[in-house]
Image 1: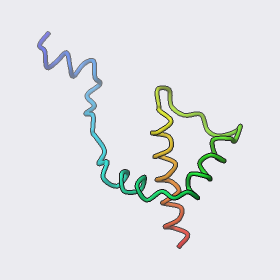
Image 2: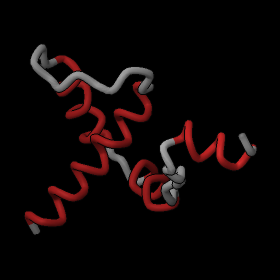
Image 3: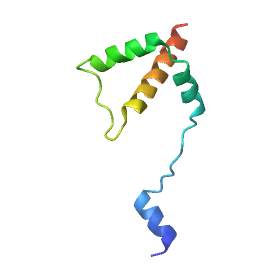
Image 4: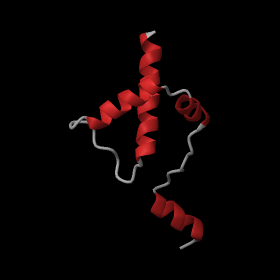
Length: 76
């Protein structure tokens, strides 16, 4: 079997795309003390959604901040 066929066969033909981290960095940099307090309340919830296996707490915090920013922009 050729090397390129091996990669195609075992990866399922999917290409890994890297997301642009510039907007995430800007959102995290603009986080306030209020955001941090809300994050701590969110983490304290017993019924919060279970994160993907292998996800770091920092990545979960960034996703939460992005969702919070989107909610704020739609509410305005």
